[in-house]
Amino acid sequence: MSNTAKQLKATARSASGKGAARSVRREGRVPAVIYGGGTEPAAISLDFNETRKLIYAGHFLTTIFEVDVDGKKTRVIPRDYQLDVVKDTPLHVDFLRLRPGSFLRVDVHVHLINQETCPGIKKGGALNIVMHAIEMKVPADQIPDAITADLASLDIADSLPVSAIKLPEGCKLIQQGNFTIASITPPARAE
Image (cartoon, rainbow, N blue to C red):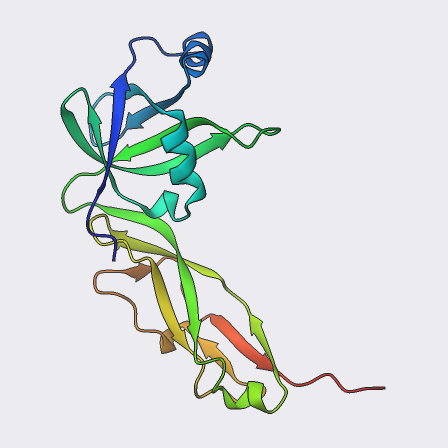
């Protein structure tokens, strides 16, 4: 669980719009905005190198940050970011303010375990991953890094439904029904 917020320093910017964003980028910074939480949006700028490292480190959109804007700290989660289509460098980040007790919709990665002991795979079956991530409603202060799906009991032609996975406390599925996470397909027959 990602309970602790990562610290992120930012600077307030007075102007918003395309021209202001371009001048922020010329200064070697990334324009960003913090919105939501029943408060006016706040235009900020972030350090370019730090922002790039955070985005490419993975789990950026499910990491809670405590953004320090000139001494005032705000708990946020990134909701979106734009990259330059040619250079793959960060152009803009949108953050959502987090209020205590709030819930978020996030895609949580599915981590498959016990592939090496799975009877269906040992018999020559192939693992068919149907869902790599599941959209869930989760407490803002307890975003799971991943949920674990155990393949230890699956044989050829078996499937692993979402009901077989224990969800973290307080987390709910967005998609209804008992959908399949993974299955074991029979080995291909030579003609």
